[in-house]
Length: 338
Image 1 (cartoon, rainbow, N blue to C red):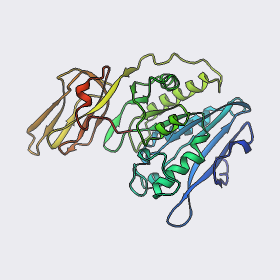
Image 2: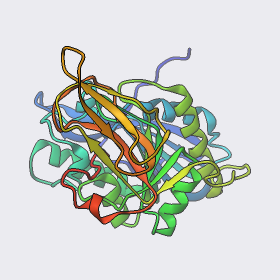
Image 3: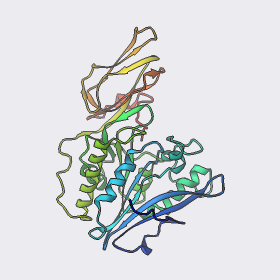
Image 4: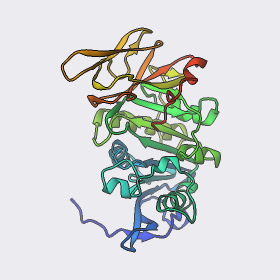
């Protein structure tokens, strides 16, 4: 173990002053907390010796979504700045207050990924979101935003992307995930703001919250490296895009109608048939109150793993290959988990 370097705090990310062929580490002053001292976002900048795109990777926009942190740490070890073309900007912890509290939300209990672009003058979360975008994200040419499932749920390794956009479709397919879901950009998300501002962006959902899942992390890392090869930022052969994954035109959550104790049966990435029982809801005496069935065929993107279940609990996130109007008309069936 070498000596730990003293990391400087900067007011914003200025890539132009950084030396080429080096790895740079700094904190970016985003806003002030209630002690009157900065909320500081850690940034790792790997600046290549040759010119090329600025490629951003962000993690932990939700403070309990941690697989992206390990993915970034492993990515650092894979990159030789002397052989890199362009610049990598890696943000392992985007929502510092949420991370410190081990919670999804910001310190004022607001979801940062619902309020982008924030406000220059507003609530604490709005100011934080605004400065995060303008001091860091606007410097990018491309962005991969790394997430996981939320508390009480688990995810496969899957991608959310606008597949009708050529650049974001390419980014999605380069990851070679288990599942890709066509998702138009949702207002208030980092992905929506970046795409609206000319930064092609996709969301990478890496498994479960509050954990490091190294198999999924390693698969995500390989997808990122494949992307960097595609853009000729690093050397190597680009692997075939999306060889084994399932591409879905739409996804939605299936909910319980009864409350009790739920057991969700399918595994992640399983294919289910229309009418198949996907969960049982029991009362506290062990009697089945509800059999929950799939209302169409699809693939399991994510699911609930928390047994205590109120009526109206999300049970299973189903990806389907055809958008059916009757599904979109059912209140609450949209997927807002990004």
